[in-house]
Length: 311
Ligand code: NDP
Image (tube, rainbow, N blue to C red):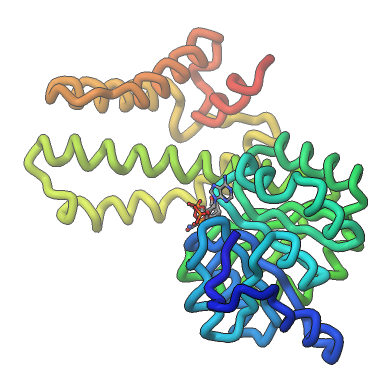
């Protein structure tokens, strides 16, 4: 339970204000870096914002800017028709929300979970919400803290389309781009997982590359301009391979997977010659070799997605 309010009495200000104004109102549960950024963006947009965090004291700056600091989750949820929860994962959001007293206050209101987790956890939360008469949207934030409240933020949402439309103006107060991906409540989390797969695999590749480059006497800063170049050639490759995979063509005309596997082997040999583990690249090379062994050596790297997807 958290509030920076020095007063020990329940916060009466929200319900008083709610009675006299039709201004949009949002509750934010979870005041880690992202929750604070969300609440800050709502305040900047003139949205009446009630906040709560498990550990007290994280709302001090927000309350100083006009947020209403609630002492309990129930009090926070009662403050707004729309509650956004943004905590580390769904174990945490379950700990915050899945209590009878909280569910009773949430009943008839809308909950949006912007915490990151798996599609199955989102669907499980959707079932819990339905059982308790809580309108529920799931979502994910695809951009870092500095983008929140700016045009650069990217938010994805899933769940009932009419519910999303009803709350879209409030969500858009966060700035950025908001996309409703479909009614399957797990769909936003599924996109989130796929996109984070790209991000963290790429990040792991970058960090491994820096370790190998340094072993060869190249500093991370020296590598950066060329690493950026590699980053920049990826988007058109995503376009091309995406079509290739959906269409089932797996074209290897310009770059057959035999050539890809050979390049991967060079990375492994160079790494291991320096005593640097190459487990990630070994896994990738093993996959490329499986594609070749399955008779697809003239196909492109896109065939790896098809092979991985085989049951
Ligand atoms: P964290 O992921 O570290 O989450 C911190 C928040 O989770 C705090 O409010 C913390 O409360 C709360 N929390 C953790 N465990 C519990 C628990 N058992 N019960 C109640 N509350 C708990 O930081 P962020 O705020 O950055 O991230 C929040 C979400 O946003 C995550 O799912 C993250 O993946 C996502 N996100 C974050 C981005 C970023 O750049 N930071 C970018 C995109 C998405 P307490 O203060 O009490 O510990």
